[in-house]
Image (tube, rainbow, N blue to C red; front, side):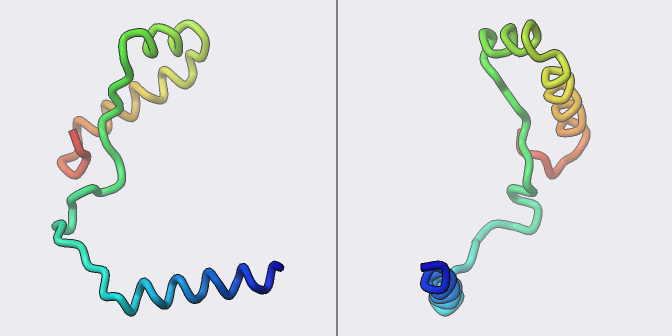
Length: 72
């Protein structure tokens, strides 16, 4: 079973490469992160129930706003 799954992954990778998938996006388009915009209700919930996560979201957004490659 595991052997056949591994072969399926290899075949998928080869077929994807052979199909010539190309992106029209520029080098920085979708650089891997975007501004996080939770709803007001979600913000209130995470601030009340998971303060460290809320601080991580705020830090992420500060970094995002400072970098032009971040999707806003």
